[in-house]
Amino acid sequence: MQGEATNTRGKQKTQSGVAIISALLVVALSAILVSGMLWRQQVQIRRIENQRLLSQAQWVARGALDWTRLILRSEGDTSAGITYLGGLWGVPIAKTRLSDFLGQIGEVRAEEGAATYLSGSIEDAQAKFNLRNLVSSPAPGVLQLDTDQIGNYQRLLVSLGVNSQLAKTTAVQVRASLAQSATRFQTVTSANGTTAAPSIQGGAIGGSSFTDKPGLEEGDDSSAHAPLQLTSVDSLLDIPGYTPEIVAHLRPFVTVLPTVTPINANTASAEVIAAVVPGMSLSAAQALVARRQTVFFRNAGDIQLALRGAGQSIPFDQSELDVNTSYFLIHGRVQHERAEVDRTTLVYRDALTHTTRIVRVQDQL
Image 1 (tube, rainbow, N blue to C red):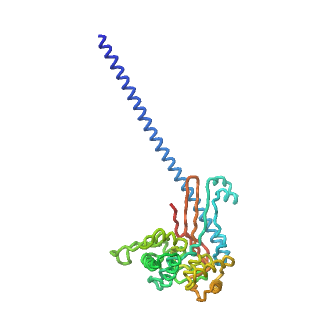
Image 2 (image 1 turned 135 degrees about the vertical axis):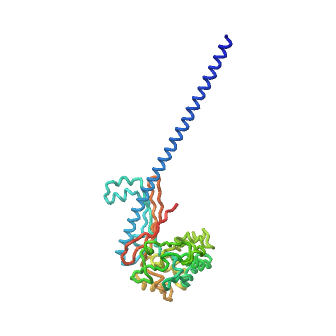
Image 3 (image 1 turned 45 degrees about the vertical axis):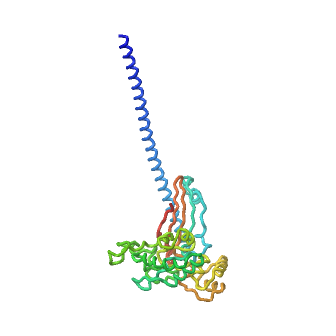
């Protein structure tokens, strides 16, 4: 009997130990599940907060863009059709609290922008060589390579130490990419109101610049795919012969705009001016740019006098050099607590009415 009692007590102790271990396992498992649920909930809350902050930052960026467009329109109204580097548009904005801007206009809730910072600048897109100029449209429905512009681009490539054979390759690619573009026959309105072809603000027909059959030739659904239209300098990477290093080297001097445009002689670099003026050396162009810092060009006659002063006797093509700009690149950055929006916007300003329109928006990742 005593042995049986001892065995019973041993079994009870064993069962008690198993129960305690089971209870501990249940408690540990419950803690793990609860902590996992809390962690997922915290992640979800954080994600919602980030989305809210990003949305707020995007709205601030949109407001800043509208304010910049107002500056461009006001500048156009007061500058008599002249765009030069000394204008108000050319002044960059250093990193500044949004509350400082709101406080200047007497906004009662200005303190809410204390954690939001703005910075940015406006760039003259027509200070660079426009690759769209490589293809001309002498008649409706006709796209052909512009040999004069190809020669200009070749001179620019040579001055930058890049293979000049890329000029014709690029022109062929641009023509092929324009085959299905609704903007392929458009040119931009000049300051005097003349146009070489029907012009639409921002470079769109019927509210869209897309085709119903992307990548296919007109009337041939079984044809090979056409290349995508060039929309930025980065698109050059799709053309054989271009490398990331070459594109980075060309970026300060080359751009891609929706329509054919002249170069603004008031803002263009010496390399670009030397490329578009036949027979002009880089040193002569640098002397012209240095002279331009004191007195900007007001019309084509001023440009011709400056070219003569730089030793350039050959008359320049007035369709290639101008003193006004229709396309601007707006670079803006908004930092709102943890969210950050780094955005580049191409804006079109009408030469006659000075109204502005957004052409495209690109966010930097």
